[in-house]
Length: 173
Image (cartoon, rainbow, N blue to C red; front, side):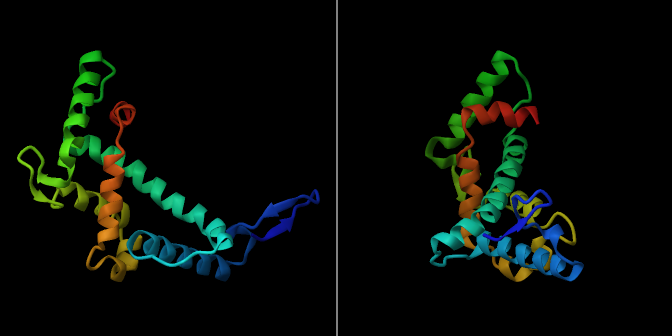
């Protein structure tokens, strides 16, 4: 990891704003490509130093996906935004039902048919990577055509970790 000396002589981590405009543009492009690769096809052996450098970017994009999935999942399955005891119980029961037998992965989750065809996957992809013309899915479409299995797995993992405490948080957003 590279550090600069700050005005007070302390070591400070380099930031994109420390560089000229051309370098900032390059960093922005490289970061976007890296985010696409992390979510679609990155399966390389990483050394400890590379892991340290890249973990921040990886956890950022995964955190972003998890945050978006909370909101999408709450809306998609009809969790209620309420602090009332009956609403919380209903949300908890719904979450347990969706997790039972991984029902949330089905297009028709009540009948358990159409595995991996849930509209929630498409909503997640649209919201995460295709929301506007400058999003990574538009700019770097080749990484998403076809949508990699790894990406579908990450989306469904974000839904599956939707715990009872997350139910209340997501419905309050």
